[in-house]
Length: 182
Image 1 (cartoon, rainbow, N blue to C red):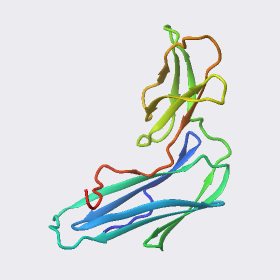
Image 2: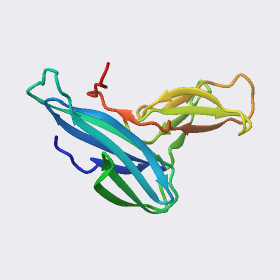
Image 3: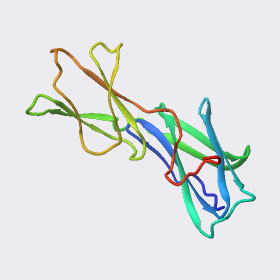
Image 4: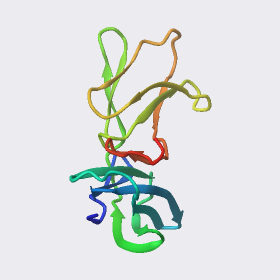
């Protein structure tokens, strides 16, 4: 196995993400990942890779990846400790700037009366677009990734509508992961 530091650590749309990529060779398998733990300004993330035994081993290398959402962080300095089997393998320090691009940017009202907005973020993360008329009760409208503008159809009743996006706080595994037992 080739183990590298996280392949990217980015803050966009006010949300911080870390992307891990592993090069797996032969019978290596990602046994487990996570959980993400936070204590103040320190994060830790664990992954465990082991060799499978008693099975056919392919003669090629392949990639596995995981996107971990650290969340909306206040401006300041942070540290991410990456471990494997509980043993430190990499430490990253990063700073969240005082200004960041909003996750949702309004575009305006279209000719049909629908409201359009642009979602900023990371392409392989799912965002749930929600709306509310009172900032208390929220309705999920759609699950999206970044790309074309989002559109909310004209409301049935007049009045204010507020929008937000929620990001699931789960690890998203890359397309090449095969979990043992599946």
